[in-house]
Amino acid sequence: MITPEMLDILRCPMHPQRETKLELDDTRLVCSSCRLQFRIREGFPSLLIEEATLPEGCTNLKHLPCQQK
Image 1 (cartoon, one colour):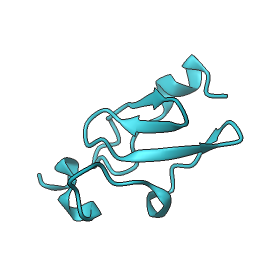
Image 2: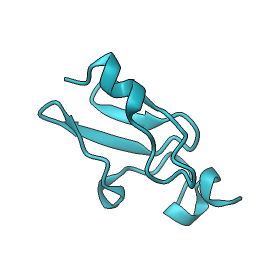
Image 3: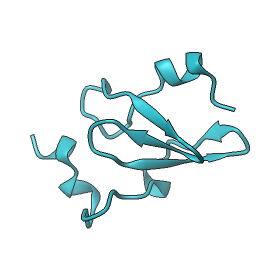
């Protein structure tokens, strides 16, 4: 289970400065900036970029908004 305290410290690993918070969305964490999605397995978030789901309309990690700057 993702507690509010844990959610407060988790950040998107794709954000260059690691400042973007993640939002809880049922069974996944979603980056509040680029909308990259990370699964939660057995109560633990998997922040492995290789296992993340790209947001709709994005074809690869290089096209994420946080990677365009």
